[in-house]
Amino acid sequence: MVEQFRHAMRYLASGVAVITSSDAAGKRFGMAATSVTSLSMDPPSLLVCINKSSSILATLLESRRFTVNMLAESQRDILECFGGSRLADKRFSFGDWRDCEGGAPYLSDALAWVDCRLDDRWTYGTHLIIVGRALMAGPNEDAGRPLVYYDGAPMTFG
Image 1 (cartoon, one colour):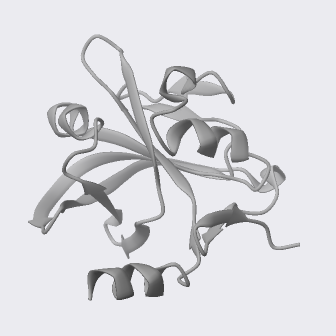
Image 2: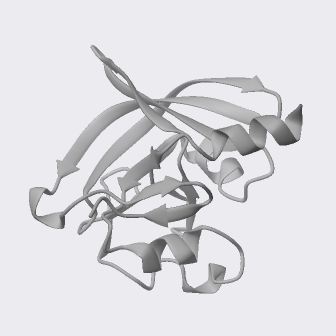
């Protein structure tokens, strides 16, 4: 059943985001994610699902701050850096990264970004389901169209 489910989920197209956080010393952490969704407008919030083995998780839980950076189709290079460990040392070397007031890095040239405070969390299976209360948001209409993940690969609309 697990393999059938994994194969079926390849056909659920999702926008690509980079979840970022930083520790008390200012060290930045990040990961690519497709499991992000809007939760509520009152209060403004979203859900993020993160594998419990992810290197960002301890920092995010300790700082209670994170940013969801929604990638534009022109930002495949950023996805490559955050999508695995092969280019982990190059994370934050592509794009215009800045720090939110709470310390989490945001990608100023992303399609959009949302600075969040961790409001709640639940464990389910291999993942932690995190509710982020939106504190600030930066839409960027000039960034183009979203980068979408479908059938195991990033793709564009055109």
